[in-house]
Amino acid sequence: VSTTTGEGDIVSPMADTNSGWRRVPHLGNANHGTTAVLIKPLPPGDYYWSVQAIDTAFAGSPFAAESMFTIQEAMIDPTSGSFDSTGGDGTVSVTAPEGCEWSAISDKAWITVTDGASGSANGIVGYSIATNAGVARSGTITIAGKTFTVNQSAALHALTVNKDGTGSGT
Image 1 (cartoon, rainbow, N blue to C red):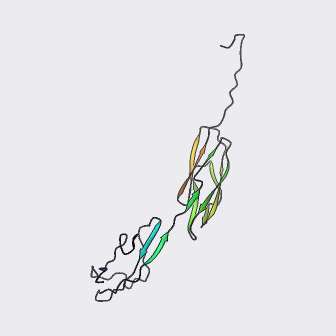
Image 2: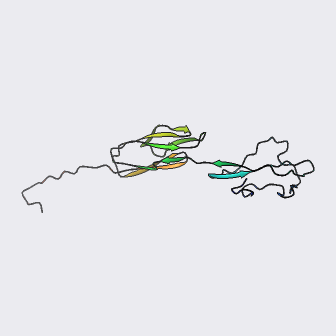
Image 3: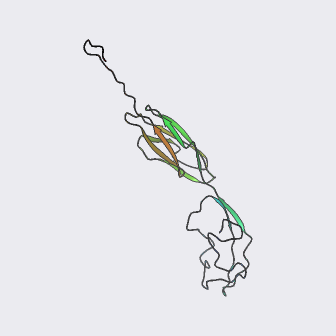
């Protein structure tokens, strides 16, 4: 597996790519099924892969024709929202590859995911922001591994000044 055609920069072959002879003389995936699984997650991008048969004498066939696969990542839009102290509702669009499962999780009790708490492929997440009676605050909703930031302004408090006495007030 590689990010460049003809290379092995992520998972290198255990056989010499020119001679086909196995570098480490022991059984590999033989008798273990036909599925190979990468242990580390791969970041989004294009990847190239190929396979090779190894016989009981540890001699390898030529590598098969190289194939390619692409890992895509989900995106959200917008990535933030601002609300006054009265709160409100909003939505976030999720664009994700077919079959890409995702979820939406708030980190604050005053941010509620109201719709689309999970999905697969494209979707919409609905959320609600509670009234703020205190200081300015911020929180996040993690959607498909991306961060949506919510900022809410402080509560407005009315101040009433009453004049007491006969002076000019200065």
